[in-house]
Length: 232
Image (cartoon, rainbow, N blue to C red; front, side, top):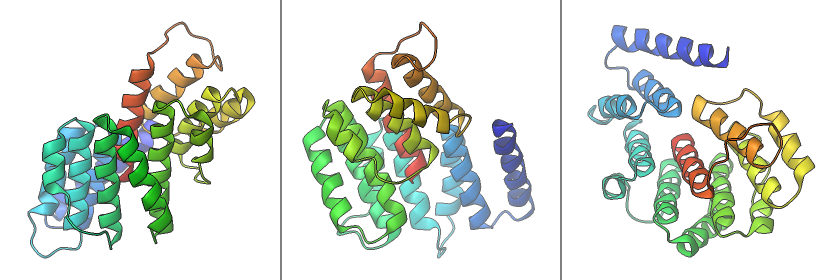
């Protein structure tokens, strides 16, 4: 049923952009949904429809979202070329900084990424965008095997993504009952890739039966991908 809602929403946006092909808000919302579902090439095409329209309020956000997709695909140079330079001021600027930090994280510059995320959390003026840096800091600390720090970075966000990261952080810190509570609270929430990640973590920490155990690099890559495709 959860996937049916995604499909229904996508069909609705398809209808809107067919009827109003210059509606950048509809194209942007459709692109966001495609990105969340993991249809990355289709999402890039939809964001391009927004970017090519002059003088519209969604252009920078679409560029940052497209950069996040490139970062998720490992195309870091393509991502960097789309990101704004200078100190962050707007919400889109802060999300762009987050994408830049995720590129550091994905490319193995763990200490640099942690420094960026921690500095951003001390300075960001936008409450809603804090969760993007929190989720990134959780994953960076997990990669560094600093499990207590990962738990402390979890924050108050109750999004499906953060609840999946709670499973990993609590499980790695041997707080199995807390991991189980996070697992139970995230049931059936999120796009298919996030549900797969949730279930794989549950198997890894003995919260559900199953013999298929993933390597920790797979979890790191999937968590980074989920963060990038959720944030921008």
